[in-house]
Length: 104
Image 1 (cartoon, rainbow, N blue to C red):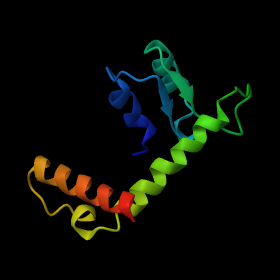
Image 2 (image 1 turned 90 degrees about the horizontal axis):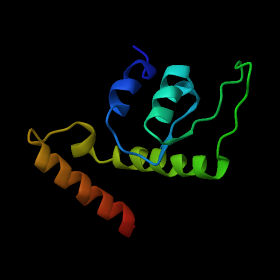
Image 3 (image 1 turned 60 degrees about the vertical axis):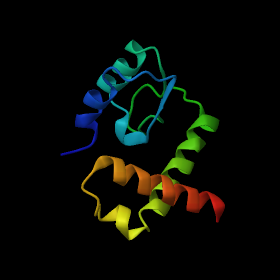
Image 4 (image 1 turned 180 degrees about the vertical axis):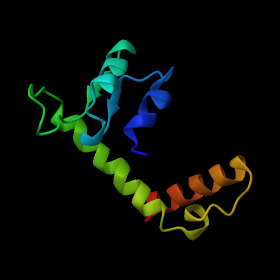
């Protein structure tokens, strides 16, 4: 199943000033839900869209930082394979790995 089908459920009730996503989330339903929530959609339009819309390219560059962080954090085997059964311990290991990444 494609990720965009689950986007509406993730956005429901989530307070945000802006929503950053890649071209795969350029769907009218997702964009409408973002506007209804009062947030700004920072999603580049697909190339096959008849009406190309504007988006904040400088803010979109911040999405790359988040993507690179997730790639770096997946290098920690304990996090990638989710050894921890409790969410609190898993969260603690993510914080530990993030601290390590920040220090290095």
